[in-house]
Structures are given as structure tokens and as C-alpha cells.
Image (cartoon, rainbow, N blue to C red; front, top):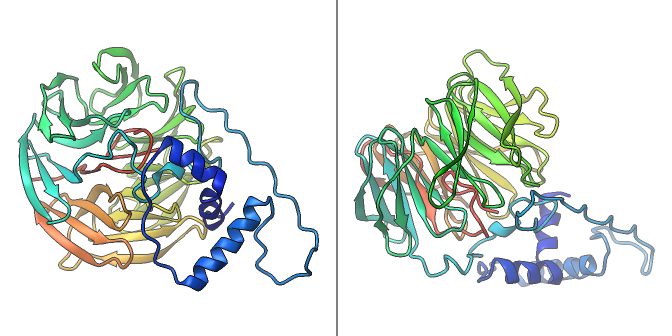
Length: 416
């Protein structure tokens, strides 16, 4: 099903009732004309009646093909049910905040790797409202599975610093060795620490961070990941050896490993397509994204996007993905349905766009400027730079928070 059909299906009465009951809260103001609204309403009515939207004029009363039943997703045991079998990001619509986070102040949390601080930005004013001192070399700010805590990954300090997003205050750090990045299994049972230099995936209690199982890996530099639609496996990038891993979530076991077919490959961020059929892996040396069939884990193909491809962020309507190209100061806009880059936005005066996230309303893309000690705010409708905010030294995996979604899978905010 193409993303346009997905979006219409999600706003039908049945799907809306599910979303309202599980994810809660408001919707983004509509801006289309009255004519567009009437056309959309007629299409939705046909869909609700069990008919395929028919764009061509036809004979009144003519039989239409039946809509095939949506496949049932057999998810990881304990995982919240998949909201839509053809859209992983169905819970991430504009401003659909969980009741857990609805009253949290909107902030952008920026870990400064060389300043050992987190700069907290008010996105309305683009001003720093607080500077939090944390451990050595903070790499990413990661929302917890239950959405209640932000964990700062102090990589060389070997600690995680918890931040209460309601108050913005930091708590006592927790000892965790080599926490380059942090993820959570879709059922919330485990935190998964990407111990990059230790060459380990460490499954831990998601609250106390006590070790449950350590999984040694033969690749070097585990750093980013994303989970399959059903949550039963996840794909991990290995930055320094140019490899990918496939990990069985329930068994906590590596079940696949491959070397990327590019000399000097350096894979970074990982994101699954809305329909769950493909994984995209940013590669800062291959200057593009690897397109991978996660189920078969066959050899991927390379899609060029720009120099120093680094971060991947999905739009709130599941139609596009924003790709940061750190080596050339640009953001490529990838269209999922077309399977190609349709736009490229260039930062005025250059820059080094790295990691970040999309605002709750979907209108602003926030990215750290890794080598320029600044943060960029970019209008997702036009690609226009809205602001540059000076922060500490070496800003990296910033988190925009809160964001829509029922639960977090980690990194700078992967929500389902």
C-alpha cells in the first residue's frame, strides 16, 4: 500500500479510535482547501465502506474489487500491538503525544561530546535555557521505552545520566561500561547498550541497567540499529569494520552478519521503511544509504544521497525521510514511494549536519552541527534554515522531546 493510502486509512473511524485510545491527544491543524477536504472525505467514506478509492469516473453501481484483508502481525511477545501492518510509524502522527509526555515542556537536548555537557534549547525561542553537566564524552540523549526518562550516554565516562524531562533535572549517574548508544527491545523488557569499543551488545534491565546478558560480537564499532515491524529482530551497523548484524531479539543472539560491498564502508544510522520491507543504512564513506531486505538479509544496494551520509529521520506522514549529509552541509529528502531522493536542502554558510530529530508537529528538523559547535533548525516544508544555535563543543546525538508515539526504541528517538 502506498503511503498516501496508508495516511487515508489511518484517519478512518476504526483506526482513529485505536489511535485515540492508545496514543491519545490532539491533531495538527488542517490547511487544505474546502474542495480538497470534500474530496478526501468522499475517498475516506469509500474506504470505510470496504471499497478501494476509485479515482477514475465509472458507472454508478459498478462492482469494485474487494479490499484484501490486512495481514495480522505476530509481534514479539509482550510488545504492544502493531497499529497498522503497512506503517511502522502509524503512532507518530503530528502532535499525537502519549498521556505520559503530554505535559512535558518541549525542549531540544544537545549532548556536547567535548564539553561534557547537555545544552537544553527552547524550540520556540531558539535559546539555551539550561546547561547540564554530565559525564565524559556524552554521545546521545535517549528516551526510555516508557517515555519517562532521558538517558545521556557518557561514552568515555562509562555512565548513563538520567534526566527527568518533566523538570529538566539530572539524577545520579548509573555505571554502564562503554555506552556509545542505547536502544530498547519493543516489549520494553531490555535496554540494549551498544558497547562500541568493547565489541558487545549488552542487554540490561531498562530501569536499573543491571546486566541480563552480554553478547560479544566479531565486528567492530556497533553503533546504530532499528527493529523489524514485528520486533522479532533488529539490524545493527558496525561503524569501524563496515559490517551489518542481524540479531534475534528474543534469543538475544546474532543470527546474521555481512560485510558491506564497499571498500572503507562506515555505516551509521539505521531506519526501517514504513511498510517494514526494507532497512536503510546511512554510510558516511559510501556517501549514500544501503537498501537492505531485513528478512532475507541479502546483499544490499547503495542509493547515493550526499557526501558523509549520517542521520535518517522519517517525516510525520511516513512519506519521506530526511537524510543528513555531514560532509557537504546538506539534507536529502528521500521519497519512500518513489524510492528516490526528490529534493536536497543546502544549509546557508555550510555546516556539518549530524544527528537529531523531528519536532512533535513535524514542521522542524533539528540537527546537530558536529564540527561547528552549533545546532540547525530546518523547516520541513521548504528546507529553509530557521535558526543556528551555538552550543558546546562537538554536539552529537540530540533529542527533540517530547515526540509522538506509544513507546521508544531508543537512539535519539525511534517511536512506535
